[in-house]
Length: 245
Ligand code: UDP
Image 1 (cartoon, helix red, strand yellow):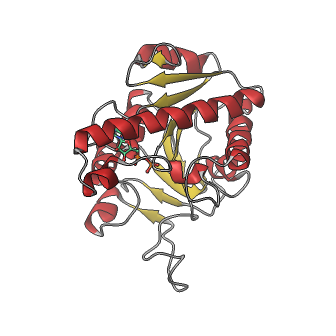
Image 2 (tube, rainbow, N blue to C red):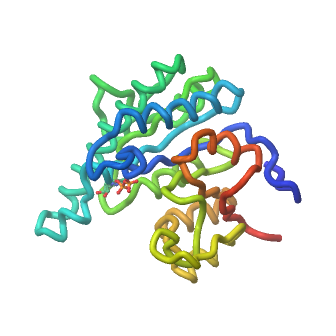
């Protein structure tokens, strides 16, 4: 993808990471149907504009391995439970997208043949070429990873032009804007700045993978209706993470 002074050209293929937290809406746990429908409408609008779209869905609204491990559960076992949580979310998102009239496939990194296709890279690419939205479930399929890393991994495998991370705020700030009214949003950052300043965007494995593959990351507010489509056109607010020079 060409990055010009005006912003990124329209991408051919984009991966959107939707965290479990995003699906909770204003709730404290689980999935808020209205929020899922709104996010699905935004994804549908982008898919209908001709951009190939794939999604990685998190599971933190239901179960996190790390939290369970802190309470004494075996970490790997907890992580497998967390990956199953992402499958529940993926099915909810699939349902909402199909109600928008968008053909979809859920592909799971953990085999679950009754409800999802197994993840096969070339098949996923083919689905997108046919205009289907592919929803990647069960993260990387491995414990000790996160769905952010799964998002960077799948975006690289799918040869996406861009990785979008939809969050609760409209970009990356120097401190938490929900707690500090003077927090400043970065317009652009390099991968190394994210790593060295320990900015809370994505985990280091995800940022490193994106860096190695020169995959630009856009962080934006997923709760702003229509923002997914706007940021793909280069309209802010958002933070863009990329290599300069
Ligand atoms: N997880 C994992 N391997 C992966 C992706 C996820 O073990 O490749 C587990 C991990 O326990 C994590 C949980 O699934 O806490 C839910 O994913 P994540 O926390 O990334 O979801 P999000 O924060 O995006 O809602």
